[in-house]
Length: 322
Image (cartoon, rainbow, N blue to C red):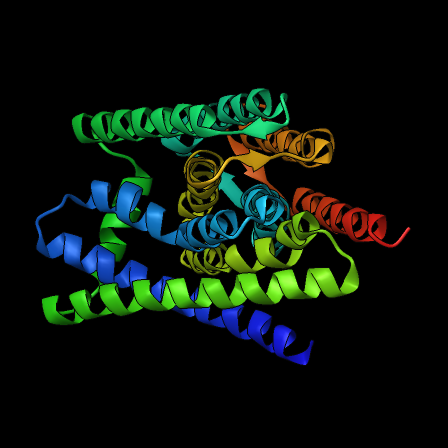
């Protein structure tokens, strides 16, 4: 049991560190290859910050732990909005001015509704994976096309500045890309083994472990990037990180896991976890719209989001021991 706890903690720490190195290496390599900053920001960095969720859910699916695979994806979405945005807004209220970001929230709502519809039959299989993957590719293609032909946005400028500030050589970039990816996979295997072992020992379902410990751990890259963005007064980037991650999780992470192995979905996922995820997305939309066209997530709203996260997590853990 002690070994499982060590594996869980070490896996989480290594996961966060390797994901950061993987993103840095991938972004720098893409820059040397001549990829536009917008494309790097939306595809490379977006994929990289969701890489922990992707690898963990894929491995969990391959090993026959559907609860862990699905719980990690949906739990990360709940963590991103309730914990990360809540904590970020408490530190510094988040001003919402980017038109790109404000268009993404209704899209996220639509994607969340789609995921709920697919969950209704209690099964996610290859057809569902194909639907999620197709929607993901269409959205990515449309976003890149719209961004490339448009005049740009503060979020694009922030991404470009961040990428250009990296002074990594091509050799170092390729090295960290490979090392980061290898360590990411090893860390995920360690994390999944530790989480499943602990869940079995304490009689906690792998779904709840995925929704709590694993979800928070795999969301740490988003927390770090959001706090850094707020420190730089780049509020749109902080919100964009969360919205982009939730889109990746709902479509790509769940789609990959379901494509690898069909997932039997517990009824509580739809009635409890999906409902909380949907409610938080609606609440975020209301906070970001504002009354006069200028949205703002203030400290009181940040506190509300954090309170929801604490209540939800307590509900999950309490349900395992009652």
